[in-house]
Length: 106
Image (tube, rainbow, N blue to C red; front, side, top):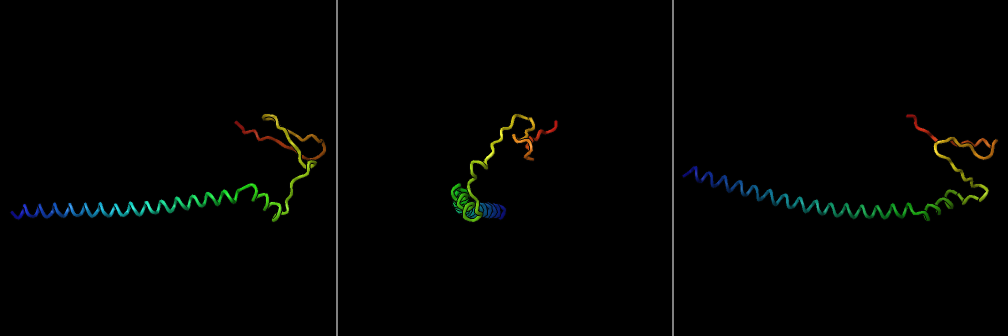
C-alpha cells in the first residue's frame, strides 16, 4: 500500500512539475513576443532614420551648405569611355591623366 501511495505522490509531483514548467515557458514566450515587437518597432524607426539621412536632397544640402561644394561647370566634366579590358589614356596627350583598368591575373 505504501508503494502504491508513493507512486501516486511521485506521479502527482511529476505532473505538477510539468505544469509549472509549461506555465513558466508560457511566460517566457510572452516576454519574448513583447521583446520581438519592441525590436521590430526599433528596426522600423532605424530604417526611417537611415532613409532620411541618406536622402539625396539632404546630402546635396549638406554638401553645399556645410562643405561649400557646388555643381561642376560643364567645362569641368570629363567623360571617359573605357573599352573592355584594355588600358586607356585620356584624349589629351600631355595632361598627365592616365586611367587603367585592373586586369586580374589568372
